[in-house]
Image 1 (cartoon, rainbow, N blue to C red):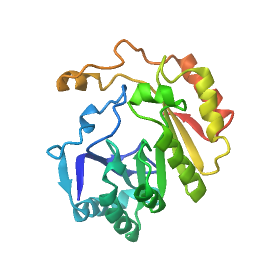
Image 2 (image 1 turned 90 degrees about the horizontal axis):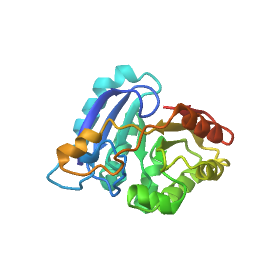
Image 3 (image 1 turned 45 degrees about the vertical axis):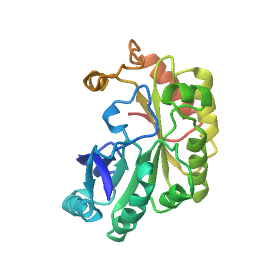
Image 4 (image 1 turned 180 degrees about the vertical axis):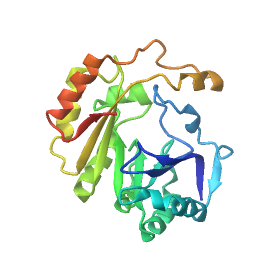
Length: 243
């Protein structure tokens, strides 16, 4: 069983092709720019329980739309908080011929998560900052597990996408963008790098939850800063896009 926050059918931004996107409840980080803060609480009273059979039924309904590329993406929250449930689900998903992806912040690193990576067709890894101090300021947690998971995936030889949210004053420092790009420059499994410009579309949710918004007053990045980041990444990495 998985504790699910919400489900998106016909998702087009969470992996290749058309996707069934399952957002799980709970996350160990509290990113200042999180646009779904309601997914963060690890409260067993929140969300709805879904069985493997229910998720497989949803996948079968969408099978005609997947064609070759589509499939299941499990996101969050942070999906690896519910690794035991995913270790039961993913073999069933793959037995039926569906492509399986995980969109993860990578903060949890352990043998169970390693096993989950091994049965996942695509890892979409959000590497939020290359500098651990800044990563802690931005998310409340270290990036050590993130980088270890990236290394583990690279050694497996299986595909990985990287994501980076560009936040003015927080993640757009040129020296750290260069370090980020150089860190992954030798990786052969990285098929795609997505730069996601910071936005404020989720700010209203903080007010509804009675929580202060940690990036109050931070503006969206300019086209110039976005292009600077794109050029730095593209000098070292393949298939860099601004999402």
